[in-house]
Length: 514
Image 1 (tube, rainbow, N blue to C red):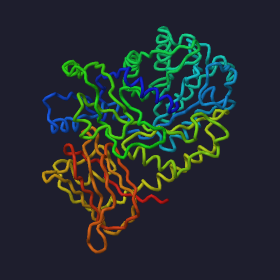
Image 2 (image 1 turned 90 degrees about the vertical axis):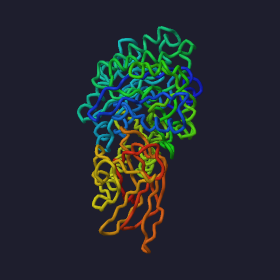
Image 3 (image 1 turned 45 degrees about the vertical axis):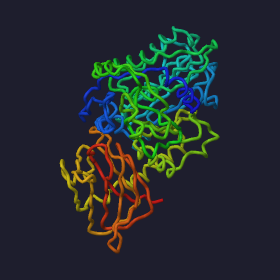
Image 4 (image 1 turned 45 degrees about the horizontal axis):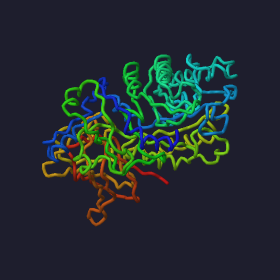
């Protein structure tokens, strides 16, 4: 996966492929199913804002968002050619991890707090990490385990062992298959996708990119996305489809950085509204609209022009190294624990999910430099977020639903709805002793919508005057803000602008030591 693939996606695929919406299965979290709403020509701007406030994630989208940390495992023939993109002519004999240890991959990821691992089962070179019945270009013709090995199985079993979710990446672009560029290739792709979705247990995420270049015959392929989506919904109904899919969108960069104002509710296209409304709880095929890479995807100005609004959250990807596949020359260029923490703030802390790539080396192990950084990140995370400095505070807030202490009980499933008859919601925290902090964490229960548009954190100084420490716009599932060190006994969070009364799940203050 490279940014060039997404350039193609943005320029052409976003205007041509379809998104598939089907009713979501109810989870234990009882996520609602109304993740799409139609805007009527008679709707006023106020009506549209109200409708946007009541769009919520499907069950699968909600469960995906709660994971926060997802890992990408780029591994294949590129690992052995020292390239990023293969051309499909590589011999299967070069794939020979001498000490492949999927258990190590998943064990280290689990310890670092990751909840899901996505494997590059097939990259653009067409080489399959499982013994596919539909191609000879796979591990079955490699010397690894005398052609009897199956990387996909070893990773899926390791995920099951450590309680990690398992995801698959299957490149639509195949530079090896002679079928690529013909109608028969869509059948070939569906057959391989079926193998991955039926032979390796539960799949939590299916990941497609937009790469669409020439194949071995010099032709390009017209992808049948809708057919693929239908297959996934049938075989793995709880799996999210990203980022060329209806459940999760690409944030627009590969830097690990999201938007300072990140809305999960964004416009769809101008379709026949009656047809959409009629099929809102059935299978609905709709065209995506516009450029999902812009800085403003969901403001009032943007949604007022919409014909349909959907819940379409952002996945924010980055590699721990400059490249996506392992290169020994990059061992000294691994991101530091501090850099990974910064990325956590700009991804998960900006209402997204982080997709961090960690490429196994030629031996089939995560490199020591990567492991060291990953462990360092976890230590820094634990040192920062283990204790909410507000946990023993006396809370004053006017609520219409819930208990004030719900917002500091470290339980996302308990929340409060503030009374906002005055147009604002004020949460006042009084502590017995002054605390020192430089991080604010705020979470909405997105099962009730994403609603906050502006908020401010203030501290009371030694003279009894309120001073602004930081401010933000959107919250969503999680918003993290860093600011200069503050020491105070009294702090207050004021929510100043909303689309509807928000459900505030958690508020926390923390000390990040840098």
